[in-house]
Image 1 (cartoon, rainbow, N blue to C red):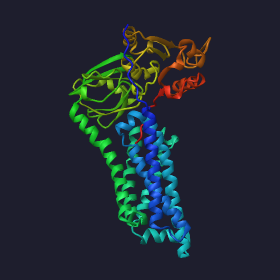
Image 2: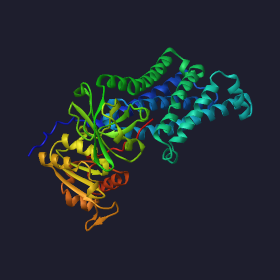
Image 3: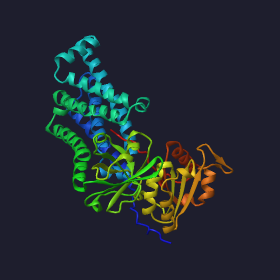
Image 4: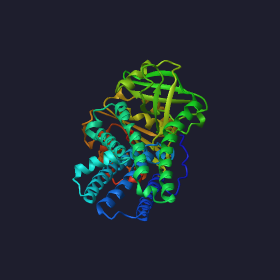
Length: 448
């Protein structure tokens, strides 16, 4: 039998290093902003002082938001886009509350100073003070973006519509920064304060430009991807093979995904996230997709030679995070695609649990079994309705997992499948007290 050699692991886990780096960055900049605020001197009015400080924290949160959506490779490979999206969501809540506090305290504070009514003071500020109208428009845009990001709204919007509305965030950033330049006392209080804020916004906007524009363009110009084969795997699943130039230099790993744009007249504007279904070999890339929507269903009609624009690779669902010599791979439905790729690359002894509704739904099964035989892995295909329970409880329940994989606590576990299956499996692993550092599950959530 053949087994991949166990690779040496860094002393500090990549995910911990990335989290520590982000938290250090946040704490250091909150401290710097607070120091700059007090160095500039608070206002004699307490409400105005609180409002100004809240505004500075809001500006910092906005800059941090840009870093989180920049899709910087170092962060993405260590945290994964789903975790970055969670950070992005919570930072968005912080941004909304700090800007609301800035707006309310400033208006009430100046109304108190000028002995005006709140509405009268607000109208006066908007019509007579430079930069206030820009700030109001920026705040309205941020409220709009926040509203469409709420779960009830997000579920009802197509990704392209949601993404287009999120582009207004960049307009809000420009308006907010111009407001800060025009009226920010802390910004103009000293050359050091100005240098800090210019550097902060420069790094944030530069990161977005580099990660979202320059890097994807450079990679696609280098690799020149095109479709070389379209292969049906089942009645509703298809594989697309692509080749290009210098693919041995593409930093893609098994388990990662790309945002694929197929440059046809009716598809070029659609970006769909699909995982690699085979480990990159330096010659071809392959995705395998189920016809779950218009984008994936139309893959069957792609023509050989179609140009491809790929953004990525993205994701932390890779062997970089493997800590134990052996592994358990759990797949549900089309979630087998990154699992099948991982089986080529992961080290040690491997057990694969493949959950499907019927044996007919087990796509890529011949390939999976062939890989398993070549490297001495064990594959269990678990078929049946999603609510089916056997004599040992739920198919992926704690008791069943322990029976099929007695040493599960001594393995890294990679889980990919529908949300319900993934959540149930993660609960079972917690019941079995598998350490969280050994459990890897990535939901392919996209930040704007």
